Each structure stands twice: as C-alpha cells, then as structure tokens.
Length: 119
Image (cartoon, rainbow, N blue to C red):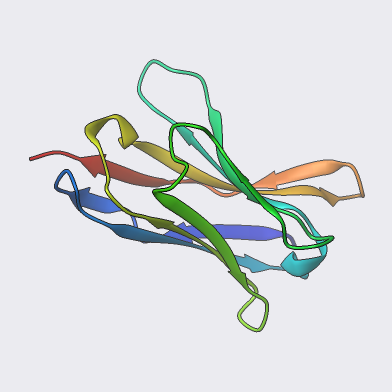
C-alpha cells in the first residue's frame, strides 16, 4: 500500500529553520518525481519544490528560491524539505506528493504537516 507520512512541522520564529521529512512506503520513492506543496488558510495549494526521478534536478517556487532545499535519501526512502530564513508568509500545511505512483497515473499525497512561522 502506497503511503506518505510527513513530519517535522511546528512553530518557529521568523528567520528560523525547520526540516520536513516525507517517509514513503509501499513503493520506491527514487523512481518517482517527489514534490512538496503547501496550502495556507484561505488559499489554493501551491507547488513549493520538486525533485526529478530522472536526473535529480530540482525546481522551486520563486517565493522560496534560495531559502528552501529539497533532497532525498534513497536508502531511507525519504524526501526532505530544508526550510531556512522562514517568513510568516511561509505558514501553511505542507504536503508531500509522489507523482503517478498509483496504477501508473494517480498521484499519492500525504496528510500534511503544519508549519507556523510567528513571533
């Protein structure tokens, strides 16, 4: 059974750092493009960062470039999102996604991890 479990969220002050983890099970995450999305209250879910299964290339939303880093540990079947220089506008529920992992065409999502940036 395909499953994604996010962890590492919490309350942090502006300028602080957090590292989110996305533990995958039921499939080999290195074979799929893995992404982090976020959804702030009253807003649509948006792509934050993604890492390719083909060549490990990464892409980021303009709002997080230079502050966030997506990476993967294939031995642990886990994807990470290192978030530095956090801002109040980064407050959101962060979701992990595995692209086309179910039946070759359906995405799988985790349940999310809440990140709150506030003083």
